[in-house]
Image (tube, rainbow, N blue to C red; front, top):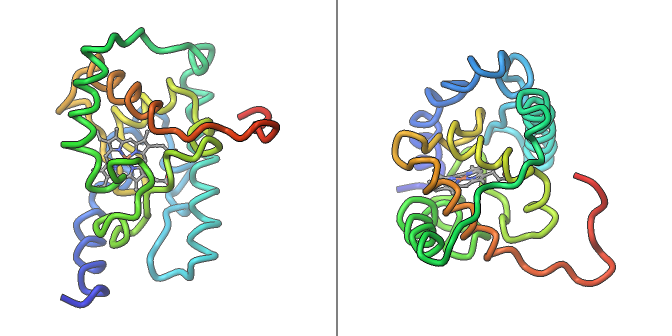
Length: 180
Ligand code: HEC
């Protein structure tokens, strides 16, 4: 099938997910009326800009919604649970995010919003662990990232996040990002 055709079908499939679920919790969808949602019809620059805007406004919303707990560390994950997290990642997440977390899979490239490189240390520290747990549970509005709380309990979600931390490339000395 033509790549554009695949995109059209995926776009139609994912549209109903947009703004579902968590808009109720935060009282907003992607920071308002969903205008930050990104479309494949835009050029790469517009898409990248709109996606950066959407991510920032999601982070602001999550900071407000989670308040003092935004930066709270997650529960400890032992080796056994970490191994289960890795298996869940392979099974449920790698089709879009790639085994290495860098994305770029065939499915990722066909999505209306492409998952970024989750192994990039700057990207990995953009959201706090609590914020990622929330995104993992509820999904990220305006993107094909759906919520997983029906499929995986909180312990497993935390285990998958622990596995994701093992994928992050080390930050070269002296290039740490300041703040989040
Ligand atoms: C259908 C494809 C798809 C699947 C399956 C999927 N994701 Fe995602 N994920 C995405 C997209 C797209 C984004 C949003 C990227 C963005 O905001 O630019 C995302 C965002 C995220 C984020 C937010 C991090 C960030 O910096 O944007 C986390 C954490 C995450 N995914 C983890 C997971 C985990 C863990 C699983 C499996 C349980 C999973 N995803 C399954 C597509 C997917």
